[in-house]
Length: 72
Image 1: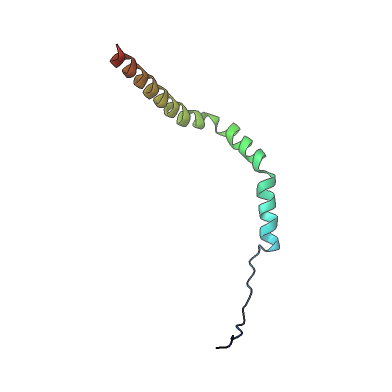
Image 2: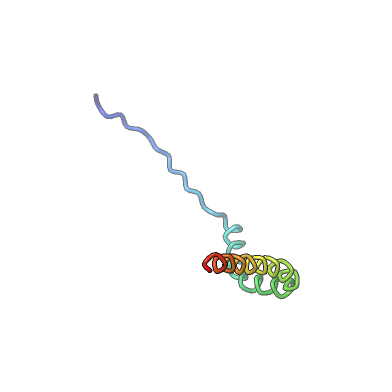
């Protein structure tokens, strides 16, 4: 049996010039946008994060108290 040549097509995907410009702008301003959003919404962030970290801290303290209670 002989080898049969098979034609292959190469497909290359790339971003258009407009998409490349948009991505460059997004990455360029990322730190500024992050700081601005935090400064504009820091009260809302506190209302979200304080209960989460407070609950976690309370649960860890409770676990430690339970460990110490069972040791004595």
